[in-house]
View 1 (cartoon, rainbow over the protein chains, first blue to last red):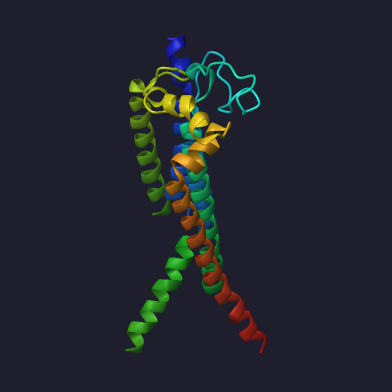
View 2: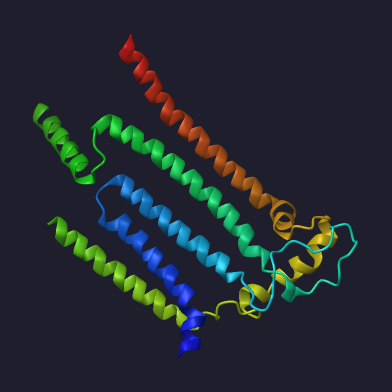
Length: 138
Length: 101
């Protein structure tokens, strides 16, 4: 039982983190809090992928030992190095998360300029009021 | 009304989390060197990346040599994001200038 928990507890931690982010995206009404929730979600996925590359038993970072020019390096063993593939994929994911966060923050600045609030229900009330005026006018 | 929506989303989140935790039962153990993620294509990268690309760092060898189209698309993503930020924020600056005049 303890072995099972030790083998799986990292997944559970990432799932809890991911659900915190999902709840912040769904349940919160402040748009900045929704954005923070999206970032927590992305971070949990990044952690999950990086943890997939871990190998037990003395594996090190995927940089070749020796000086890199064929001197002082032994025969390469697959078990000696961590899996480089998840690290590469998560570099791309970090870049995408930075890009989405930047565009979302710029959009939030525009929303604040127009409605002078970042609360979702207040924005919806203002919009409803504006559309009611428009139908009255015509 | 608002608390009702929060309760619904909390229930949905808890159910999704329970489903995902149930799904981890079939996942390989943490740090398993023979797990599918560590055994399919990554041994080839570890064994041959340095030989084929003359880069001791396997992560940068995979990023810039094996998957350079991926990195090209990534830079397209950054470019699109920066262009859209530029247009979104330029409107604000123009509006500010209009207020001053």
